[in-house]
Image (cartoon, rainbow, N blue to C red; front, side, top):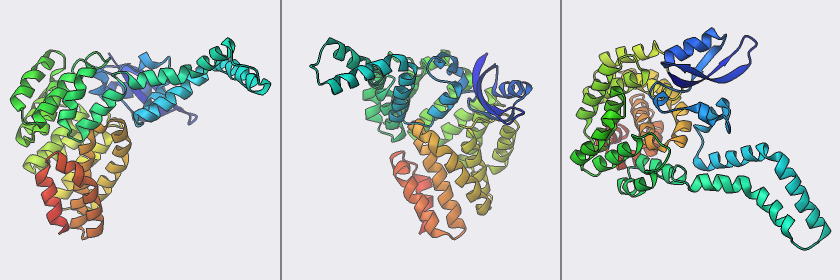
Length: 367
């Protein structure tokens, strides 16, 4: 069984965030409903549940705090940790602060007790700084941002520092393969990534392989990889959404994409997948000649996805694609000003990721 984070309200309207053990997101939602909760939001999707173990973090963070931290930068997370440790250690820190206050007022010389008091006060900051500088802190955060901005040489330089991190075994091979593919070394990327076949469920293996093809700019193989993932997991919302979006992007197949997105809505969709579901539906509406409906969905998708991009900048280009499709939708409605604004936001990421066809389409649309 896996661990899922969910938020819901009880019969008195009080909001609770809890960890639920289940075999799938659908089952987790049903279990939470059976416990008397309503207005349920699923925070962990079936893909993330393969690696996530929120119960390990209970000593520091409540489930609600873990949900909030997903949208925070590493710097904000570190500040939150300092505050958390101060609250936990108040019975030590308060006397230490009192001793130093007494020393300051008395005007006496600095001694051993003052040194001990100062050291105690620095414990939360020192611990947060240690986590910041550890491989799973700043180096990992820098790696995710480098992936997001397609700085592939930087990714390769940073990865050796992550080898001993407490990360999923597949994380480093996947990021290395993305970087190699982005540098035009696709065959080498796939050879190195092959070790993940034994580490990942089949649907995730092909889902990550789609990311590698995406870094290489090979859209037909992105679609083929996602088709394999869909064959292995035809009910998982994240897979359904990614496959549907690729069908529209590569083949302009809105009919099958619409069916896949409708199937995704019949399951529990996590809040992390919700913006991409809306973006997929907006893309279908755009390609079917309904730009006004597309604008509404794509605007909502951007509103929902932007906080998660702060927490995981490796998927920044996904936000740029949504903005590009919004540019096309505004242009189709004749709102050139809004279209140009969205294109300005999307262009830098589309350029570095070589999403040239979409960028060219947007530029032609805005004149």
